[in-house]
Length: 205
Image (tube, rainbow, N blue to C red; front, top):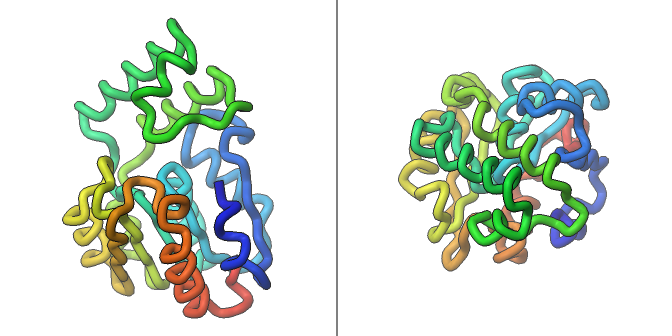
């Protein structure tokens, strides 16, 4: 997924976990497992589900997390309607498999993903904690990147997130949907470089 960002991340010490390979079905559990493998300060870049893990890392280790770069990530938990939608997706995966589920997914899953992995990921998204309290307490740079056609994160909601952050910045990418890092890689990479330039070298992880 992050292949288009290789050039923008050159020169930084990168930890790029595969969330699907982590134990359990909890965003908080995943954040704890990732944190166990980190040393010192770090900045976190996350898109969609990865952004939820980034917020969980900021809650878990507020003094170690020096910056958050979130793409297509909401701060709030799922409402009842969204939870029901995820429950329906899980049922489809269990009964009919990936091919039946993929047409309603935000992006086709990689071919190596299994039904069990996708169910665990959907459960993690459904049950994640509300992180709106994390944002106003986070003192480092907190950037939110959103496509103006993102079906899951309206621009107005993204603006509310950054307005509640002490050091927030909103970047809206025109003509992009949910996966701005892929759909508009050049602009996304410009923003990523600018974000990392604000983070001390020791925390560029």
